[in-house]
Length: 171
Image 1 (cartoon, rainbow, N blue to C red):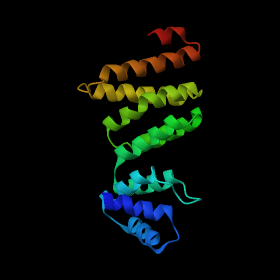
Image 2: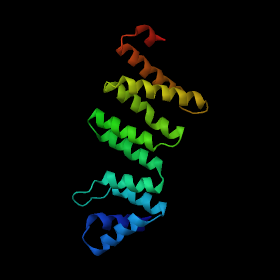
Image 3: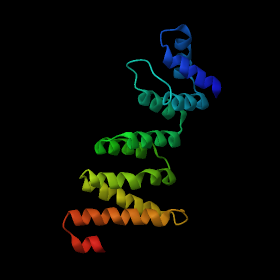
Image 4: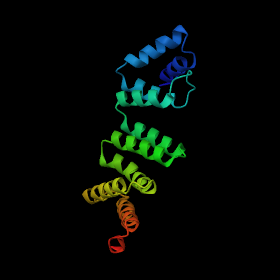
């Protein structure tokens, strides 16, 4: 893995050197998922040459590596770093798209449903709150199942109150 990190550092720090071009070519053409995952992870920590977006490169390499957990973490981190609630929702939607399992989806859905409500997208908030409840119902052995149900019902109640449906909000 250290060789991968060195290659990424070379490939991004000095993009005009022959070493960096060779390292970048190796990363771009490899089918080794460990190299791609390492490159994607380190891309988020290393300085990049002007004009390149480290998130775009990391996303590209992590997708090729088939590492949805890392990709979800990247999107969640970007969401947390953003001050714009709509950008937060975009990043969390990308994380949700990367999720392949219910375990991965429940890492994203609670925050996503709440942020969708907070940005005024009641339709999306209700949809994702219901998805959260469906996943919780289908997976009774989830350790955080009660929390998922609580968040799902809370978002649905907030949406109902926002629509002026007091009776629905209480039920």
